[in-house]
Length: 420
Ligand code: GLA
Image (cartoon, rainbow, N blue to C red; front, top):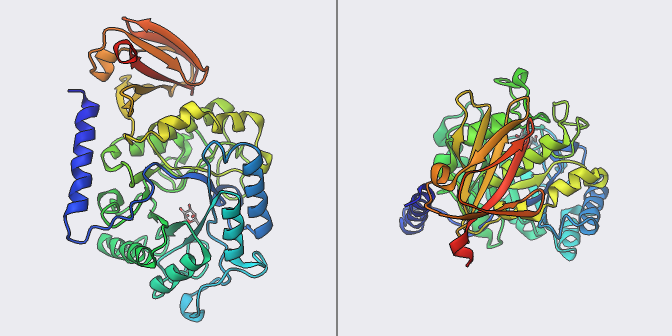
């Protein structure tokens, strides 16, 4: 039996164990595929307001992003009225009346009227990473407030307030908010954000989280060794970080590789990083799709280049991310020096998604063999090139292509017999 099938069975056993324990596992039944949308942080930091969000919604409605599946519009930090300690601002949580003069409920109504969902951000401490009032001591009340506003997604961020807290405390504060959200009765996707610390992947799904960050904040870089071991992770760092965590990810509970950097082009008002080439952004999007990360655009959608829009709207790549089987890709081959890797994953229709990733600095030949690399006994197979939108084959020998430096060539392989 193929490795992927064994993995699928193991995942489904784990999922039913969660449903059957009755020992307090939480499950909101949401996010059966990774969330797709936009989030304000990577480009704008806390410089957000109602006009920006409405223009973002209007643009995504018109330029095809909504139709491509990007429906969550998420406010990150900076929507709140007060900076400082929540104890000094003990009333119900409020939006900044200057940035959001009509309030968040009216913004949620606007988003919903256009077929979008609205997300919001806060954290379990006295204050958030950007210094705004957190939810400590007001968890149930804040959850009710967000539900009454019509919120659909919460990023609950303990990265700063609980950086040095014991793992059990981090788990407890996330569980508390997860329970509070479920108690509202409104379907609200729950992102438990702890910057890849406290082995969050080991417990977050059972505490009702639909996604959790596997690393610290992404930088607008494809591969910047100077950034390694500092706070920020580049695209390759994030992929490597996730390589051993794929078993934790599946329908309803996803490893989150952080918000996309496609289109930032070194112009973020918030993130460090010098930007990446169009090929590197395309590789980043391909790989986030292969590993089933949530796909949250981080750039200003009003000024995206044609190349970035084409990257973000490749439906054949998005289909890998949104495949109902929900198996994240694993590394099935890598060069001894790790300068090239092949990622593979089984899809619901029994075809396989394959990405040939050239991490090195010059073009190289790469090849895939279903028998050798995916351990599936196909005699003849077809290849669909998901960036060139072309069918190739059938083949009964390994399929090889040239892959440019920092490029990922992405294919869907299918057994000739299955198609017959
Ligand atoms: C942390 C998170 C970021 C962002 C900021 C907001 O750094 O990792 O993604 O949400 O907080 O302050």
